[in-house]
Image 1 (cartoon, rainbow, N blue to C red):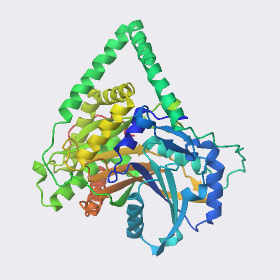
Image 2 (cartoon, helix red, strand yellow; image 1 turned 180 degrees about the vertical axis):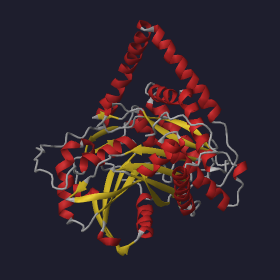
Image 3 (cartoon, one colour; image 1 turned 90 degrees about the horizontal axis):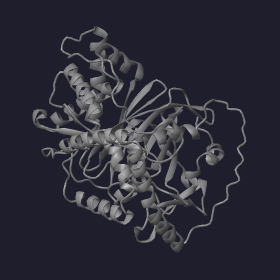
Image 4 (cartoon, rainbow, N blue to C red; image 1 turned 90 degrees about the vertical axis):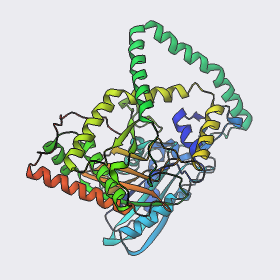
Length: 482
């Protein structure tokens, strides 16, 4: 048995039938599509490298402990690797509709929490793989690592046989799960005492960390003030829409070098511009809209690469949709991101997650489920959207000898959030994947077009060397989202 960490468990507790907590990606490959059996063989060869693919979730009776991962005694690869096709020639709209339908269906909790859909029939003889994984298994960075492990690094990789001697372990009984959770409750205070002893041994370091976390918590408090009502947030239904827009990473870097700031600042400025266009298209005044986004930030270090779980904190950023000038908008984003970096919200969020491990699982589970149910009826006003930026591999990946041409992300919608944006870089490209609630966000295409237009405008200004309206932007990196 492998017990979930507190954040992993939270993503399970949040799911309620309308809030689906799976992350996903759509990988478009060059043609022709391989035989289904070839892809089954590819995935089968990588299973020994990803133990979680053959494990399912077991909940502890009465929520005495956090859920655990156990081997699935009935694991069937072909159940998880599905095959479908679009009416050829499948265009972007067809692919987006299919993605929206697949993302509207929750994963079966009685089985390992992942699926991969092979999609044939795309225009130009191309095909795609839609990879869908529950957020309790991976965060954005770990999800990219997972795809990189499953796919090949070469078009014709050397034949390497990985011994697969997997046999499912015994399925624990409810009594075993209860006893294990009870033992964990007994040993948890020992971990707290160990942490306290560390504090006593290094009081100066502990005091400095306490000050940092306190500063971050104060910043969180001010950042979570309720925002005015807007059509961008509110209750959602179970169905999803999805679309995407692409850009060149080289173009983003051209803008960055000409205007200053970071790559992250540039993409956030483009997203802000897209939201401004959407607000105007809906007949709302951007000067009177406060648009706050949650930005996940990876706290994963090198020692945790290849570990499939969640290791993220978060910051809250007010997107300056009221700023009309694109360069002033980029300058405002950069200034705010620098301020957030100094506010220590990331450290405070990480500390809160660690502290959650000391709270009884039953209390955490019931509180999260209650809040999730309430938000489906009473809209929350602390954040309006989510924007996540995940760095992907900057080299080509292959499946059955076919190159992965486009790697496009999907972000789930949290309680009360109607639109979310995920940004993913891969092999010199950048893709913005936009998720919308089906009933309340039918116009996410306006947001996509706005992002595309913003990138074109910023690139034109960068190529023309026009920076007169931009404030001074220091060329220092901001916090990397994950």
